[in-house]
Amino acid sequence: MINKTGKVYLIGAGPGDPGLLTIKAKECIETADVVVYDYLASAVLLNYAKNNAQIIYVGKKGGDHTLTQDKINLLLVDKAKQGFDVARLKGGDPFVFGRGGEEAQMLLSHGVPYEVVPGVTSAIAAPAYAGIPVTHRDHASFVSFITGHENPSKKDSSMQWDVYAKSNATLVFLMGVKNLANIVKNLIKHGKPSDTPAALVRWGTTARQETVTGTLETIVDRVRQAGLKSPAVIVIGHVVSLRNELAWFDKRPLFGKRIVITRARAQASGLVSKLSKLGALCIEIPTIQIAPPKDTAPLKDAIKNIKKYEWLIFTSVNGIKFFFDTLFDMGHDVRVLGHLKFACIGPVTKQRLKDYGIISDILPKTYRAESVIDAFSSVQIKNKKVLLPRARLARTILPEELTKMGAMVDEVIAYETKLNDEDKEYLISLLENNEIDAITFTSSSTVSNFMSQLETKNTKQLLKNIVLASIGPITSDTARSLDIEPDIEAKEYTIQGLVTSLLAYYESKSK
Ligand code: SAH
Image (cartoon, rainbow, N blue to C red; front, top):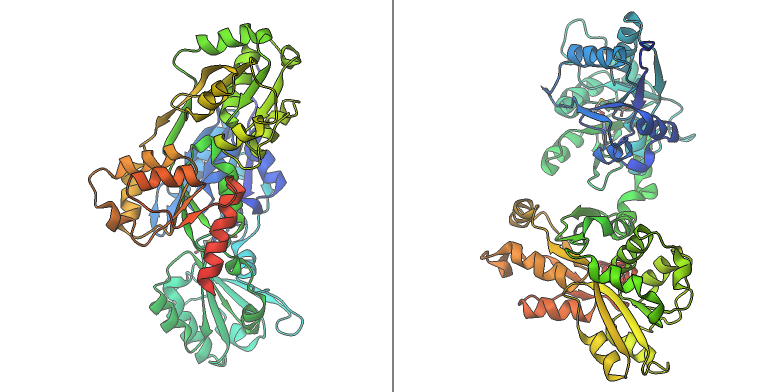
């Protein structure tokens, strides 16, 4: 075998918002054998990596280096020489204060091939997300990116304070929070008017973004008062005043709200993406784990005898998934279901069923078991054989009522939901430190599993200032039975309904 040298891709991972990763960067992460990343790159991007990729953290946080730059360099060379393609992820753009240039020179000197994938730099993106365009025809015709790291009192400083002070450029300082007072002092000393607008944007482009504005005269005090720390960009110039008009990111209705998602991780993405788009910071604390049933025989038997059924009813997306997984594992395809009529509990299950090429015959008006029963009142179900693949411990009302209507119902367990308390300590620390604004409950078991994790803690006290949002009346009843009262109950018992109600709640509060 030819011992080929791998290639190193020096990749800009963008400023934090995972959506600001370039398509090329995503492709490089997907194909890399080794992914080397540091502190500022959003960890979500690692999900794009191949399953068997080696993921190596070499992060830097302030002065606290996990690996020195020399060791990082050696690591890149070493992995490439072993024949691996390496994705080297760096925050923002690799060539803007990212030491990407040094890494490229070093790769070159070792004969390791490389490519550079530019990224969206925080120097432009963080101001943009704060509503500050770094250039504007009326305000600034050029922009400078300046290191804020260098001690301005250093004798052989490369800082050209007189140039910065006299130009009408927008000045963007990176790595400058600790040096802010010095930066401001030098600019004023060299003639920059003290009423020049200034802003700091911390954790730009993320749900944790914070912005403090002022003038050269006031900014130091304001930043101190706000307790704003690194990482932040400092923007100085008249463009900063445009923020009053152009702010958008932090104006989104749920901006800055820290919302806990208690659904199973595999199911959380829809809710997380809807809330994130509205500006919320979602904290996933799955209280449920979804697993195949311990005994798969009953579901398999039902599928073996599928011809004897006339109706197939699904009350959850998981029921659909596990039913079809089993069906396909048994070597069948959907044609064996051709004789059946179908019912779903709501629009999401209906859509999921459609993904398998099947249109539900019945869709209830509201999305819970009682409504399914109403929907069946106009259907001849007497003496009909009904298969109901569901979770263990699902509510019994549906099979009971259908049986009363004369149907012959076989309930089989298609999956199990188990308590997940892996994040218990994290949850309690968030509650104790007031780091949660709202908690979403999307089923009865999310409530009971959540409450069981608080154990003997003073739950009333812990949940006192937190908005509790329930997906519907059944979930709310479970909450009440555990002595907590939801502040919000969705009008439509779906994820979208829950989001709409949360939004309405916060909108009414802000009036
Ligand atoms: N290559 C990076 C910069 C690395 S230097 C880029 O192009 O963005 C690290 C500095 O970048 C931090 O000290 C801070 O000034 C800035 N920075 C990086 N990410 C940031 C973010 N999300 N919000 C604000 N500043 C950020």
